[in-house]
Amino acid sequence: MEPTTLKDELKAALPEGLECKFRYIQTSPKPCDALFSPPPGQKPEDTKLASHLITASVTPEQGATSQDVLVLAVEVLVFTTRRLTTIFVSKADSTGYLPQHKPSAVKSICSAYLKWLSNRLRHKNPSRKLVISLFARSQSQYLFPGSAENSSKHVLDDRQLIKWWARVLHPILANQSNQTSPNNKPEYQGYMTVPDYDKSELRSFFPRESLASGRQHWIAGHPLEELAEARKVSPAAPPRCLLPRFPDDPKSRFMEDLDEEVGISDESKIHASPSKRKDGKWSSIHDLARFWEAMEFRQECSSGRSVGFLWLVMSPQGHPSASQAQEPNPESNKLHPPSPPLKSSQPTAKPPKTKTRRSKKSKKLTGPIVPRKPRLKGSASPTDTSAQTNAHAETNDALLLTKDGYDQAMQTLLHLDFATREVAAHSTAKWVAEVFSLRALRKDWAWAVVGTAKPEQATAENGVAIVNNIGGMLIKKKSKVEVDGTVSGSAETKTELETPAVNVLGAGMIRKKPKTS
Image 1 (spheres, rainbow, N blue to C red):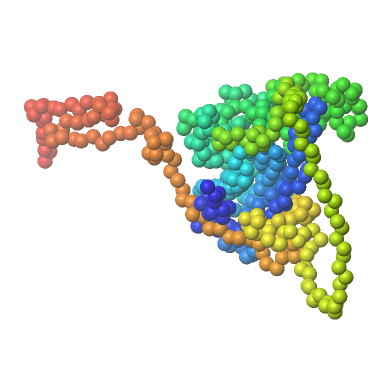
Image 2 (image 1 turned 180 degrees about the vertical axis):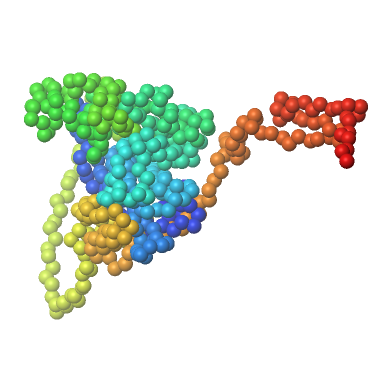
């Protein structure tokens, strides 16, 4: 089944009537440093990296400027190896200039984009395991300098941000969890780890929809051993071989410190012994459980701060990977050496005679010389290549840039100002003009999307709308007074307890007050 387009996903996710302009840039996959350290005695995995950045902007309804203003940006790094595809959410930030909507437009855009990107990558390699990985750490601004000064920007704290990202990933789990592989293991599975929180406490971070459904969408823990098996690496390998090294990641910084302690880092001043470098083990951390315990004492995870690590693993649909089926097992070759050739009484066939290839004689050219017509070259930028001319058709509405061009666009964005709406509009135009110059574009590559999502009422598992019952003691039914003056009530409304009994006086007990003249 062909995956839907990015426009369709965003249209179905955005609130009804909200119009946004999207600009999408990316690079083609290029070789990069290995994401995982190789096990002892093995070579690093061949890894390719593609960078993606999607931005959303809106045109203010009121104000001094009519230019569109950036409201959201999400940067994603896609690492690809032979057996594993990793989508790492590097940075995500908003400016606070997006009007409030239900459902949340920022959350809907992030969820729809990750869903579309993961489906697109899975469609290309259905037999390869795929994982979405991110860490949630609260910060006032990531991609939009000065946006923290905007009073309309709602900055979440650490706990709120972890819950928010879990709600971003949960729709992908909920929509696909009914598809299971032959061993009854969910094809989509979420994992969460927060240092200094035990498994029972982690349940408070899970989305409420996950807890209400009764299905185990989220697991308190990590899938690093499962990912190691997908990479054909033993889970008993040193921990540094099981942990990915993402840029600007708290885990990666801790791993660099551990490498430096034992001298197995390339930049370490301490030179480890050949045996220590060969086994690739840390002196104080011997397994993953000890690694996560030590993470609790890191500055980023202590002193009242919390960092959440989230994974969404998408397993292949039952059939073995193509690389596993085609690749021979080296261990089987050791156990079963090739048998010697059998002797035969028939004479061996003589090898065929190799024919010597005669060199072709070059034919002399005769006749008049016809000059070629001059051909105009396209106005290409130094950061562009000729293979990127059909970027929109190849990358589904994304503008394809070289690595240098992408880095230049990111650096320009990180040095702008988004403190006020007018300044943010000017910075938006400046960033768009910078990308224009990188590709020598003649028109804006942005595309508009109008949302169609309507506010949904929470539903239970059977599809019935959930009604908030404020308690039977607070629901009172109006009592009916009969002709004879008695009160008739229902036991469910507790009128007998709440309404005092009525005393009915007889006719003889009633005396009229005499009139005074």
